[in-house]
Image (cartoon, rainbow over the protein chains, first blue to last red):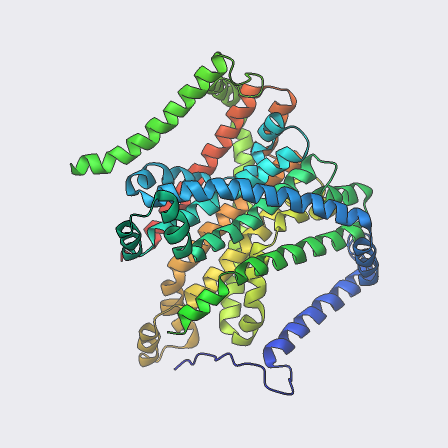
Length: 265
Length: 252
């Protein structure tokens, strides 16, 4: 019979376990393969630059003020997009999730429009909000609206009816119901929706920046491409991936304590 | 009463949408909304016919569909065997499953300039991005599908003294197919979204550049009509794969 692996805490006098060793081996193999490919020149030499060139570019990137200015621009645009798009989605999600009738009327539109490529709306966003940061924020807001709204609507429907009846028995107003009952009860789906929404808003903003912008990390990526500065482009992509994963992990931690308590039954 | 319950929400949804379009039409006509940036919905409807007739939509659609299909085949061809590999080797799975999940959340499409350098402004760049974007859900769902096979089915196979390959072919794989297809559906949708997105970004290929070309001509009704067309195609594609998935999933 198959047995389930048990995850145990690190013992005193830590020694790497098999999983860590396999991970280290995979990373080492990829790096060695990359370096061999770079030295051999089998691929176009500049497309696969040697690791030391990427490391130098990474250090240079992290030490440049220009990078932080562009990072700030992208983060600011993403944050505004998340607040605007996520805020609207929260409202729509609560309304649709709170009414079975309205949910059945309008949720299919969200469900089917959600998985469409949002970047194609960029020409419209430029017309509406100009070529500056406004159109990037709008792209991010549009991108994150759908996953957040659907997640909130699903979370709203999963609230135990007894909590809603308790709120009603206290004659709570709509605003009190939202802040004291709905939002605390669906904290996990809301945070998960925003986690998903953050990633999608970031993609929307960065892609819009690659298309038409003079600031932001997306602009830097496309600038490096136009200069054919491959080490700098790799360094930038590594930083963007690391940042998005860090932000994702950070938002995930918001739901973690409750999950652990739930799992301790 | 039952018919009312069934059709009233759909009627409200459709009615609300039509009402919204009528309101926009009126607001543009009376000048509350600038007609230069928001064309009349009626003009967009007329432009939809013009775009389909004059802009070579069919060959464009076939090109995008071909790129999406190629990316989808690669996603299935790489993703399913990778998922099986991770299922077979538990240590490898424990070492890499979180990486695959993290990869799914990363802004993969942003590496398109890298593929532009490698493949140039060609369909290969578009297919490569579509493939990479579609892989993580297929790998994760394949793994989930095989891990979720009920132990009783495996014990039945063992009681018949099936070999490893027979166990895989007659029990594990058929039992995992519905979950694998759920992953494949997600993978195909991700691939299609990225194919159209990258087509738009690099201005090459089928439906994506159509929007670029019309907006550069400042043909606003045409641009809106082309966007509506692409959205419609995406929704139809989504509906089609969803239907196939339902057909494959056994009735519960």
